[in-house]
Length: 144
Image (cartoon, rainbow, N blue to C red; front, side, top):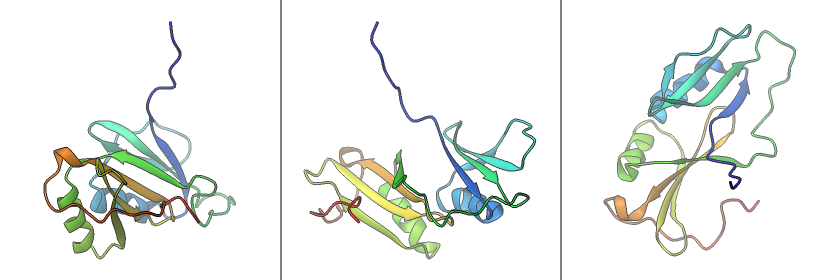
């Protein structure tokens, strides 16, 4: 029997901007605010394709400081579909984003930030997408 870490289950954001963050994941990325266990603290679980992939914790009632960005986590990525539609959706909502092609051309990407400064990477298999390929970028989005 081998060992496998598996796939990403969810990521958690501790925020003082719960309503704004829920709106971003619903209105901008199209996730659904869904069922969440009855924890003793406020928050929300955001679902993609029936799975709670973003867990939000409202730290407003506490003295915990809001971190200015995602800390040592540089970004969180989703395997996505509908590259052109997402670009149009982001533009219509006035969101700043960057699209690029991974060198080699098999993967297209969109990068956008949530209200807490968390960078969200949306990955699209080029062979399954329609439309013009974004520019291939030589630099790496992870480089600071």
